[in-house]
Amino acid sequence: MANVSSDQLGSDAISKLLVKQAVPASIGILVMSLNVLVDSIFVGNWIGSIAIAAINVVLPVSFFIGALGMAIGIGGASMISRALGANNREKALRTFGNQICITLMVTVIMVTVGLSYVDELIPAFGGKGSIFEMAKIYYVIVLYGVPLLALNMMGNAVIRAEGKPKFAMIAMIIPSIGNLLMDFIFINVLDYGMQGAAWATTISYFLCFSYILYFFLSGHSELKLSIRHLGFNIVVLREISSLGFVTLSRQAVVSVIYLLMNNILFDLGGEAMVAVYAIIGRMLMFALFPVFGVTQGFLPIAGYNYGAAKYGRVKESIYTAIKYAAILATVVFTGLMIFPEEIAGLFLSHKPNMSDVELATNAFVLENTPSAMRWVFAATPIIALQLIGAAYFQAIGKAVPALLLTLCRQGFFFIPLILILPNYLGELGVWISFPIADVLATIVTGYFLKKEIEKNLV
Image (cartoon, rainbow, N blue to C red; front, side, top):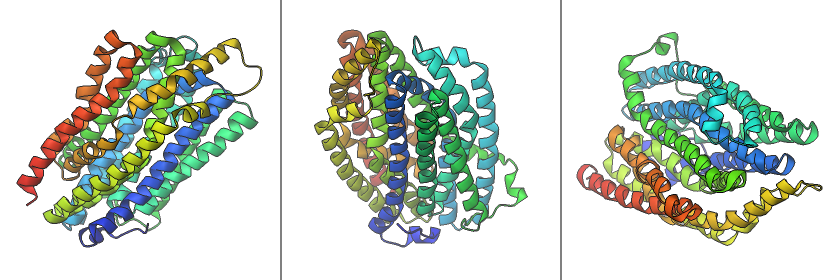
């Protein structure tokens, strides 16, 4: 789990490198995902299941703005990895400086717009009925901290590109632990309700930002910026944008999916059905953490070796990453198929003297979540190929195939399916859309990845 210098990405054994890069990334994603999971459990138990639905409504907006930072971070990180592999440190520095400037500018504009249209955006994302007021409280407070979230996402990707996964892991752990502690204090001890949940999240963004700032200013980073690196460079920005657009498009599609799912499920079953999806959405973030960790660990290895023209190592990294991720995905799949009832029960309040409405909502959620969860995760063992395949094209700077394959699963297949199937199958049509999209996207990605390997990695 030790950090590596960037040149070791081109010399150490691939399996050893992947473990060094993926284990810290997996732990960081695990802790961050556990934060989301436990945060939802706290909110569900201490405030109520409608509160979970309210947070689920706000996620698409804050998620998208935060994703701007992630997109800029991953787009620039691909450039930095390849620049370091080609021993072009000046390009790496220019890239990082431009990442900082564009992240600040874009996210501040987005937050300003987001706060100006609060009452229109919340209902559009499914915040209707009794969900609206709780969602509005959470939305306004969290949005103030979202520029910090974007900077955190961007900085974390750069830290990984330098071959410092241990620091990236710590940057993810600090806000997660901080958020849970703040949750306990603000919600359980001080009884601040949704305001407490929102402030806990916003403070966690600040804690993460403080640590990332420390990393870059304290001498741990290889990227020593000067003022001249902070000016906008059109050539650099164009490449960051083209590669970052892949990640941004993926996250934008996720936001659109939340919007569609919240509205479709509200129409099918009201607030309780939105709560079912909120629980499943948390599990989608949490359960696949080891697969996402392998994907994150794979990116700098593939990018560096491609930049150094070591194509045999690139091909080996693809096969090794797919193998590791597939094994982990199968383990996750097994657990979710066996324990869905127990998982659903964790999110529900067991406090005494609940109202009839709360009791009815809990009963509905507990009855409907397990079967939905089994359908949603039915194709989990095969998604490793799709995720690694799409990540490969992004790592080597091929923006167009990376974009198309990234959008393939959720954009090209899943969204049309959830717009069509519920009209004939009701809520079942929503849930079976997940595995159908996974299978179709994996077939398409496997075809294009095989062609790429045979043509360019020989």
